[in-house]
Length: 249
Image (cartoon, rainbow, N blue to C red; front, side, top):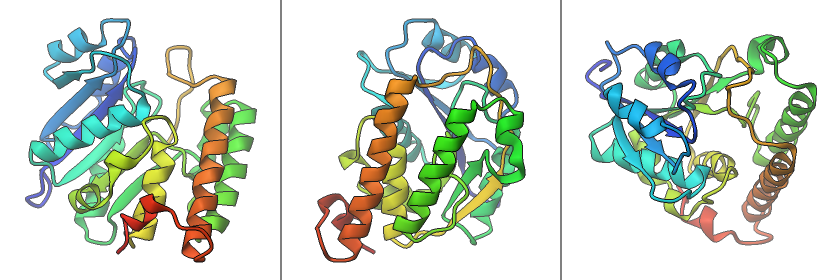
């Protein structure tokens, strides 16, 4: 807990048994009040390991997708009384040690959401990010900043902190169940007037870390561009987007 605010960390998991224990071991339990893992019908021992580590564990009976996994995570965190929710991939690619800093940025009252950026500080390539992924990240981020009217360094991190107010306000249930959920959520939060902060985060790319393949990455990329373009057209009054209307400030 920080300044009387309850902190929850949610872990959307799929076949994370090889990295989960390392991730959880670096989470500061002195400030984190609740650890929630949703297992999206993994084929390994993710759920059993999660339970053995003392995490509140939810298991999907069938694979619903990355976005659907996050929806379950956020709903559970809110139901269990979280004031700030930190979403962290359990693949040990991001440093759990930044959770106190990210939560503190929201507690300060300056920000409603915080993104842990692999790009700030120049650690992405040093941490092993493939060059093609780095270039795609930079290109998509540049385009999104123009269409969304922002100056973020990265939109594609798997490490984010949200205030309860954001999660209760946005129509997350209407968002995609797939990977583009992340970008839809950011677009909706920007439209609703929520304030974003960023923090530099080291990254690790290694064999056990999760990663979508090239084909899924291309599908994700087009989904990101579609989201940003629909946002810009809707904000310009040229083409309505019902999802954005639900997040009107």
